[in-house]
Picture 1 (cartoon, rainbow, N blue to C red):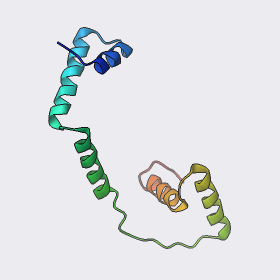
Picture 2: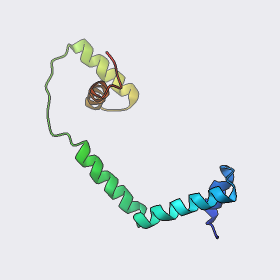
Picture 3: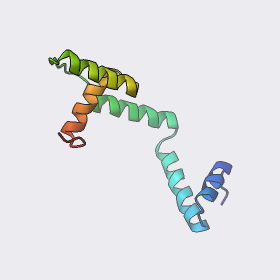
Length: 100
């Protein structure tokens, strides 16, 4: 069986034996047949993400200036908009990833 150069380099890094290489190669070929291109995979993923994470509701809350400034400072340190930080914290809380 003839493997691509990049596949062989990857297999060497993972110390795969011939049987493991054949299994991995077969798996990668099956994936390529299922999705013709990476662009198609990205398009399907983007579409699914848009549908799942659609933000179609607004919420207004009142916070003290001190709390809002602390949130804005934290968001600035993280390099994200403060609204995104608030949304992320709420999402993590309701999915059980963050506990009060």
